[in-house]
Length: 66
Image (cartoon, rainbow, N blue to C red; front, side, top):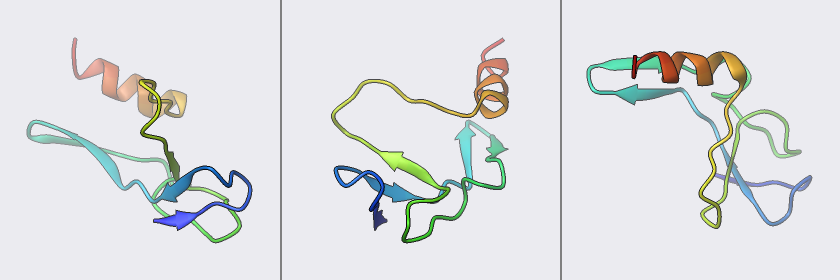
């Protein structure tokens, strides 16, 4: 987990994928890694009830509920 200089109130982590039961949906290439200048990765914010995902990853997660 890295402090993000572009967004100083957040921390960033790499996201390899999202697991749902026996299935793992891999994250797009830009999410598994993060660098110290705030590029790529995902923001961790425990003060919100929202989760924002890139559209393709979001659609793959939603399709698991169908």
